[in-house]
Amino acid sequence: MRSFSALVQSKALVNGNWIDSSNSATFEVRNPSSGEVIGNVPNMTVSDAQDAINAAKQAYESKEWRSLTAKDRSNLLKKWHKLIEQHSQEIAEIMTAESGKPISESKGEVAYGNAFVEWFAEEARRIYGEIIPSPVANREIIVMKQPIGVAALITPWNFPLAMITRKAGAALAAGCTVVVKPSEDTPLTALAVAKLAEEAGIPKGVINVVTTNKAAPIGDLFCKSPDVRGISFTGSTEVGKLLFRNSSDGIKRICLELGGNAPFIVFDSANVEKAVEGAMASKFRNCGQTCVSANRFFVQDGVYEKFVTQLKQRVEALKIGDGKANDVQIGPLINQMQFKKVGGFVEDARGKKANVITGGKPLPSIGPLFYAPTIITDVPATAQLYTEEVFGPVVSIIRFKDETEAIQKANDTRRGLAGYFYSENLQQVFRVAKRLEVGMVGVNEGMISTAEAPFGGVKESGVGREGSHHGIDDYVDIKYICMGNLKYD
Image 1 (cartoon, one colour):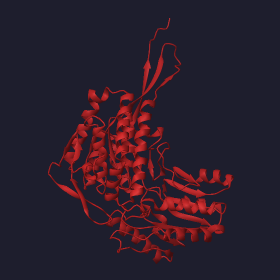
Image 2 (image 1 turned 135 degrees about the vertical axis):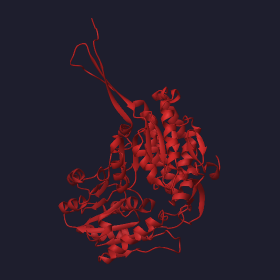
Image 3 (image 1 turned 30 degrees about the vertical axis):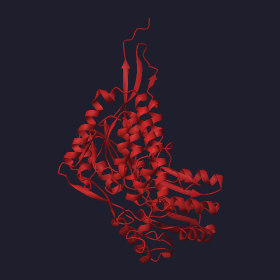
Image 4 (image 1 turned 90 degrees about the vertical axis):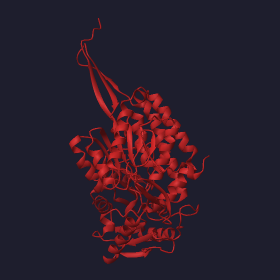
């Protein structure tokens, strides 16, 4: 078992080489809990990113990679999975240091993220083709799936390991090569898992990692480069739309996992204790900074007071602090921009006569980016907390009268990633699950993500699916082969 510092990399990975940026520029990585500088990484340029694309293309076309069978690729992914598992503690410590999430959550993410490597190691051998009965006697119709080529993977800071493995695992299983552009806030986790991929024997150039705090020009390069055949992005809807638009000229394969505005509905028929438990899991994981976090809580009249009272007790009992402590449940917000956004949303709701029943304030005595877990009731439909994704530890509660009203309000958004509801009425469960305009529904469950299930949204929350056997689809082309003039007599 190596030390924490030995797995922290200070260089980017291009074509199997750990390198500085071409202009030797670097940027600092800071711990959001303390503000302490925990590392420096290369601030790569567009030219550096082009080198990474060239390396990925060369690796894709190389005999070393293309000659590998599905079983060979599967075995490489299994070795990568094993190394991540062996070094899960060090990776979790790196993750907590740069993202601020509690160490218990970081350990959970390593296991969750590594499950995608394991899953796609298995799926690599199940990318099946077809033989279709021909309407002509002397022909055979064969369908096969082939890798698209180089894929650019742009990943966020809130799940710095899982969002890489969910994409790269699928891409490598299909036979693609990748260029990863991790978030500027959390590049160290990305570099650590890339180091382990190298140790697993994945050939040079198959995985490249480009670190930068100037994402826009490199994202534009990914969109416009003819050598990048696919882009997978997890992040804001606004940036996703830009990537979608800018990549249209090249007709690239694109997978977008974008922002949500998840409804969390508690019906009169719900088990309130379970609903409160689900609300805590869905809302406060990673300090509310997940794309599937419940954003708007709709609670029916009959259980409203009971739910709010129990939730308030649980929220006020949360342990807040530096994530490296084992008993901490809530860490800091990731950066100053997010801190200002959360505070601004709360003040907007206050100004519109919403009722802050707990929290609603910064916690400077703990650290500059800590914000108190907050519950706000009577949130009007005009408040930013209602119309936009807060991405922070704020519960917005809205009372409703009947099922029709709840569904109408839940669907009254241009986003459609995840939705949650609690009900013990079987008829209601099927009605509501079908009527919610989202890509994923949690019924009596607040945590729904798993490697085996397809993750993705509808409306402005994205296109494509990650995880499950559907996760391979964005990295393969379907080829039809017509075998003609065959003689069977």
